[in-house]
Length: 273
Image 1 (cartoon, helix red, strand yellow):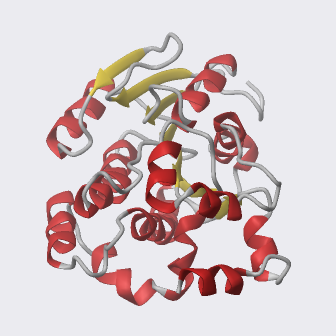
Image 2 (cartoon, rainbow, N blue to C red; image 1 turned 135 degrees about the vertical axis):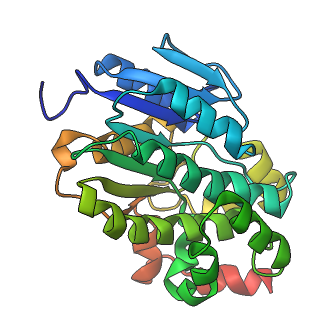
């Protein structure tokens, strides 16, 4: 058992099917010796300990899937998500945040001291810094149903679906890290920049390829799913035992360049006006 492997560790991966970031994480976790349990609508890319086809929009089905896994879970990878359009804002918020939170809370019941949870947010959620008060009522909801009702009652706040959901994921990560540290469970998230996954076509349709590439300027290219799998695997590994409550920007340096003025975000905003 080493810091950098997953030998002897039982992990749950939502969104671990298909060919996106979750699937890349499953492929790498298998190489690292993890016992992997996947919950997704698509089958995982490699052989795993268990696979359950479950709709994250159905919290009861999700709870049943986690209960079926049972035992002790060492790490949860929340990798499922919707891109926004063509999906409704409420469904996007429900999968990207409410289901993520529900899965985390249910899986945390199976964790002991040393457990870890890592989720995928996005640099599209960078506005969380300014929007804590807007999202506090949603963060304070206690259940999936209560949270969905809040989203249905606040269409203006969740407009667009994707960026709002990712803001809340980051804030929930910070809040949950404090709550779960009392049980010795760490909570973190990554915020990828543009990544060439199957959802990219939806993003390009909604925002345009030029907009996507604007936010890939740090590294000068879009990332691969594998390049996002590596950091999220690190965050849930033994090597990150003192890391919790963090939003890890995995965007090739784009946000850093925007914050320091090396990329002129004002020019982009003027073009959108």
